[in-house]
Length: 149
Image (tube, rainbow, N blue to C red; front, side, top):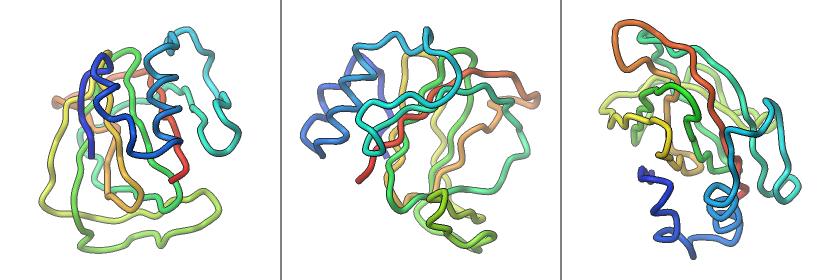
């Protein structure tokens, strides 16, 4: 997990070539001006999904990926993203089609994501985006950069 301000993106260069492309794009592009949907940065190696979502204070099912990093960025509104190191129970086994599996975790670390910040979720790292920071959910606009490992 990496959690930081977008202005600090250069600190993380050198982890991988694909992550370097994603960090540079994140820093040099006005992400809020992108239309909702998928935008290719480097084909299937690096692409961005821009979307709208509603946060939920009762969300509990973590996700994980095997092929891709997620770089989570809120463009409007804010959410909590929870991280864990291990699953207690796999609720949906990993499917290569879609690169996703789901489960229940314990021992979370919580990061408060808001515009100007980003969170990198590593492949196989359990993470739970879209959690409402308070008792009430809110509508957010966000971007997720998918980066092949």
